[in-house]
Image (cartoon, rainbow, N blue to C red; front, side):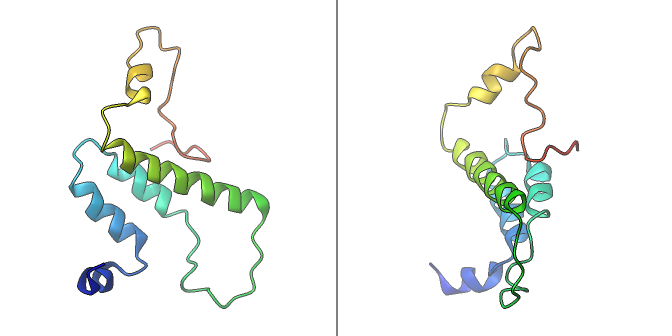
Length: 104
C-alpha cells in the first residue's frame, strides 16, 4: 500500500468511506457513513480493558459485513436487493439494510 495514502486515511474509517463513495455513484454514502459512525473508537481506546457485550460485537460484525457487501456489490452486475426492491407488490421492503436498522 502506498505510504502516503495510508497516512492520509490511517484509521479514519469515515473518511475512507466518504472517499470510496466518490468512486461509486450508486452507493448510498449517507447510509454507509451513518453505519461507520456507530463503530466504537477502537484506535483511541486500544489499551483500555473494555469488554464488549456479545450484542455489541454482533452489531459491529454485521455492520462490517454490510459495508463490505455494499462496496463489493459495486463491482458486480448481480444485485438481488435491487431486483427484490423493484417488485410491484412491495412484498420486499429492504430500505433498512443496516443492523440495528436506523431510518435515515
